[in-house]
Length: 150
Image (cartoon, rainbow, N blue to C red; front, top):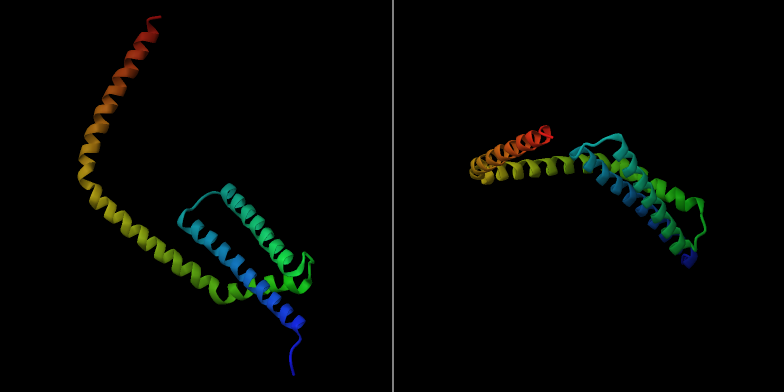
């Protein structure tokens, strides 16, 4: 018994919606990983969330426009929500935990390598910085003396 082409198209559309939902939550996981590695304040978090929801709106709009001629259908939005829910249950915790650990390990290793490589230049930097600090102090003192004579 052959399945009608319309039912196949609707099933593909539902599958696209589920994948879009999973992809959108994966994008949010990337944002969560970034927040754990680079901590920042509530204003930036709010701005990031606003940008994320703008992207979500755009993705869902494009999906509905391309696949369904712009008609909003409940099962399409339900597919997006189902995709997000399945991603949260199956992959989200693992993706965030593993990636944060890997990135922190790599950054820690790179920090140690940079410390070793740049260690010889530390002595030179201290001498150069000390010289410029002394010159800056002399200049500031001269400006203060010049201003106080007026």
